[in-house]
Length: 113
Image (cartoon, rainbow, N blue to C red; front, side, top):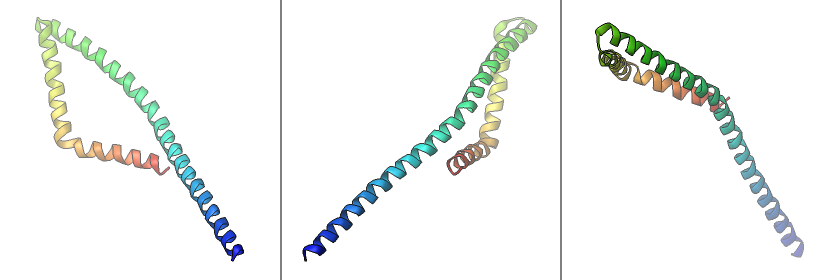
């Protein structure tokens, strides 16, 4: 009887150790995937930031140039704002689902890579 108790205790101890090891493995796999996705996104974020800065200064220059053509600076800014309003509406109504699907697919591919 004493031998059976020792066997059961040994089995329970092994099961506990296996459970702890399995939890650690899941944590490490999650950390690996998270770091892989974040490290894959960082170059895209940097390029996006540089592109936004370029577009900002380009649009400022274009707005001032159009303002000189129209005779007043704020007319140039109105033209640029109207252009972006039209682009934003077109993207919202016609490309919203496409953009969302592309981003979701990219993130899923990164997670299962």
